[in-house]
Amino acid sequence: MNWRWGAGSAILVELASSASASAQAATPIKSNDYTVEYFQGPLTAPVRVTSLGGAYTALAEGIEGAAVNAASPAVREPFSTRWFDYDVGAALEFPGAYKHTDFENRGERRSGGSGSFNNFLYLNLGAQAQLGAFGMAATVDAQSIHVESSRRLELQIYRFQGLLAYAFEDNQFIFGVGVRAMSMQFTTRILPVTESSIFHVQGIAPQIGVLVKPNNAVWRFGATFRAPVSARPLGDDIVQSGRDGLRRVDNFIIPNRVQMPWEFEFGLAVQIGARTLNPPWIDPRAREQALRAEILREGLLPEIQAARIAQVSRIVRDELNNRYDSMPRQKILLLASLLVAGPTNNAVGIQSFLDQRREGFGQSMTFSPRVGLEGEPIVARMKLRVGGYIEPSRFDRGTFRQHFTFGSEVKLIRFNPWGLLGDSPWRISAMVDLAPRFINWGLSIGHWH
Image 1 (cartoon, one colour):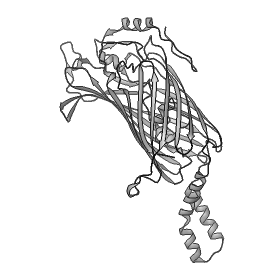
Image 2 (cartoon, rainbow, N blue to C red):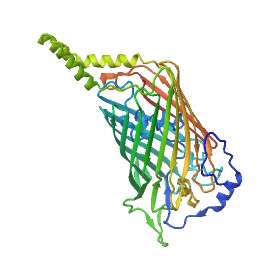
Image 3 (cartoon, helix red, strand yellow):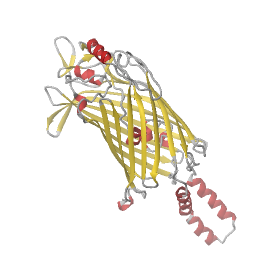
Image 4 (cartoon, helix red, strand yellow):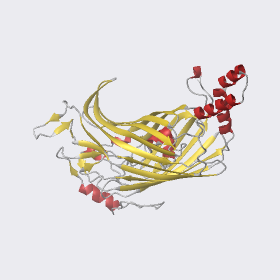
């Protein structure tokens, strides 16, 4: 069977005959005229995003939002009470730490082949800065995959993002633009601490995003479009050309390009409970100007006016912090989104490339519905998250599989040496993603809010 789309929480049954037919259709790669498609079927994203089943497009908060919506850098959260604010994040996940991992949803347990997806990890780093209504963010995702070869090869894959966003209409409508880039290379370890790149491709493409969040409303809508990234080989003098004229690295016939397909993602967020989803964001600079004007109109003595004006910044900061602290925390956040990925012509997957087999991959547009739920069962101490998503198979005869995701966030102590790490207490987050032939778990650390 060849199911290319599905909806809701349908339970999709994988047929062994499909996997068998797919295996029989595979042929050896015999030319450089092909494309390797790099598609993230299983979620490899920041921990909060993954624990919510990837349904984060309409929430798009914090540095985690950069993974799903280009508008996220300008999204002001209720605790953001300064004109200049920032966020940083780091996450480590282990989607390839177990045997029999079917990372690309091929739909078969294969004892042969490279087995490379049984031995890799995922690292995410990001930073975000906000200046009034303007925001910017940069993130990097990294994967390192051990390759069975005559040499000590590693396949290293990096995704980079740079985003700029601006909030209009009192932070109710946000528009963002940016780029996403991809780099893939073979490296060989010459000495225990020395690596040399022997094949390298790079590519870059634009992306845009929007977010609509009316003040005091309980809903948000978000959408983003990411153009396809086509990565071409850079200088590759070490690539070998054999008697047959084919370009190789070790025993691998290399492709003429690596591509990430275009993606369109949109979603809705709804929050129920005492806490509103979109409290108006108050610009502290505008509030300071208004307060100064009030002081001047009071006609106080000059020295008293000067003393009160000198305290304006502290007064406004305390006022906004008290406003946030007085907000109720009881909430249930409901999220839903849909990820649409475009086709790639003449493509094979990463595993097929490493196995040097031609298998139809990425030939059709695919759809991935996602849902998530977040609550705070222990107020001001612990948050819990659950979610799920349907992962499409990019193989021609593949079928969908269902993922279930879980996560939690726990408040830790305050730690702010020399005033460099912010006033908020720290938190640790964990998540797990479970599906047939796949398990992923990860940890992250950041500020608690």
